[in-house]
Length: 428
Image (tube, rainbow, N blue to C red; front, side, top):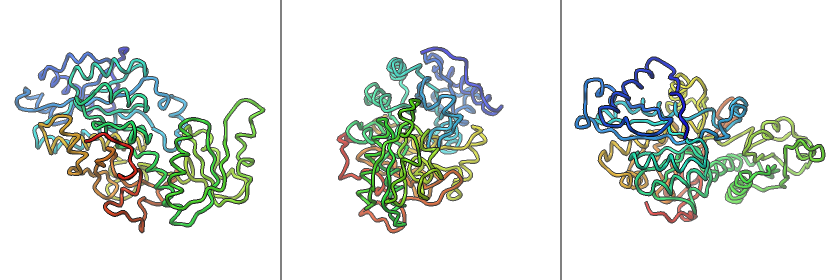
């Protein structure tokens, strides 16, 4: 881990919060965290208590760490500039801070505070050292903005000492064979996203999909999720073609959108491109006049800044004011994770990390995600049940589950892996 200068704060209000947090940290004996770089922050009630000389006897404080990698390619400057649909728009610290701001009243009611740490490892290789330090410092809530390999390292490092929430890895195996009792997920999985998309296609009788798949392992995961959803809802795959972006002139036909879509026996084009570079070129560039869905065109998303109902505009507006950019699905996932942490603290202020995990996975705790229904976590794999938006760049055209889709107990469980299908064996 390498030391970096403190993060720049975007307003006088945030500067005041940082100063108050440091004061509280000194009062509570938190000044020796030993993590660099870390930005100690806290909720307003905790800061107010610190400013009046409060001690640990008058206000309880739990530590929350947002864990990420400095060299995460998802946050490379070029990728952020291109703003691929469905990809992160920036680091998730502002979204977590928005969740803390929203929790002011609830935390004040239980005389509780949260100390937020921005914990970044230089690389995946350096991550175990950071995780060991967090465990030593008894950080109770770990918010994971990590690739799947990093999530696995965090699960192994934390054991039962922390509650882990996966904010940004949609991989189904983290909810299946590689699940853990202490690991929850707030971002929709690949299976949930593809189920939402295919529900929409089936409702409109859009059949015979021509599938374009990229060469990466993540593209293969997208194809597996698409195949499962298409079989589930009766969408036929007319054919699959591989695409590849390459500087080799011998491979240029592999990125030619007209050649790749020349077949006439299809009604729509599904593009599966985890990277996003090829998918952005496809709408209106196909040989046949066909709608594009998947990784561009009509997309399944956890959040869209143009959502106009259920308090969505207020959430998007407050986030834009704080972060200076639109809210993405990953930002929403971080925001709702913090709300889940606060909800379980309100329910069981003195519980251990194991107790909090059991309460959240037990279905007794609900959170409001500004999507309509109350949201809860699935007992069998720790995934947050939630509606998924069907949207394009300019707006939302649908919300899954769609009307008419049925389930024996909970219609939100039509999105993703249901209990009888789950490979997760970790008991909550």
